[in-house]
Image (cartoon, rainbow, N blue to C red; front, side, top):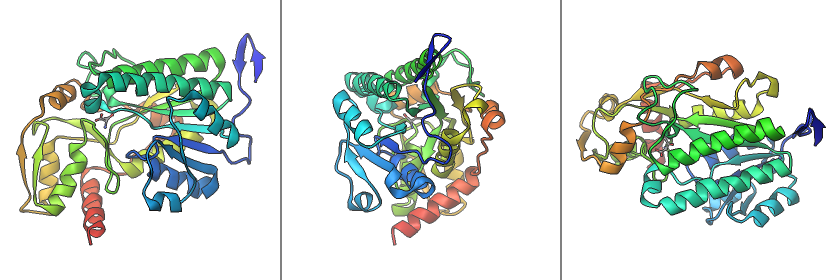
Length: 332
Ligand code: AKB
């Protein structure tokens, strides 16, 4: 590190021509394995380490390095970063919105205390650190259609509060210490071969499995609940492109990214174009419905498009085609 105008700036976390050494926390959640696959293709199998507190399935072990890492254990985290010469940290561990409302203490511990550990380790070792934020970082008093990058953020969930906290702390460490903090606000992410864990947008993954397996789905949100969503391939590509964006292209440290928005009703109609007998009934879960009713209907993401070239590929018809094909093939 070096001192410039009283602010400590880090030496580049990976020099030109050098490949980064990446650690992914919460690697067994919805996104870790997919991101590791893309990062390994780009930087080499052994330069990307997946980590979690659970034992992974065999295919995860077979595809590259996996280690135990508990983000609540500062010493363990530091040891991993030092022993493996980590230069980039992708922090995917989090308790999502619906589970967080049922266990506030756990969400506080993982999403706030755990994040503090990540931030301090990253700052101490001059790492580039990526932390996802979410549509859940907004609330009922935010403009909701579309929601701009900068506006009122008064979320009503512990998940949302912890994500606003992460955005602000990361930006503060960036301006105070020169930490290379990068944050994208993800919509609900839809994936075929990994499951989300306890979010409000989970229905949009579960509905596809039900459509293929039983032809019936009971939806836990009202039929007219419009939310921003994104196919996992777009999410992973956005994350890769943002992680690799040159520092001087980033006008901000936190960006909205948007792809499509739909209601359960829209999604059902699109699935019925392929599976005409598919039936959906509605039985809204009061916790999830209250959360969704305060979230954006669409994110305004022109800054991401302008500053580092974000562009989504999947819209609703492509999403439905791709998900149904993957799930049908996966079941054979
Ligand atoms: C959730 O529903 O909690 C997450 C999210 C949108 O952040 N999928």
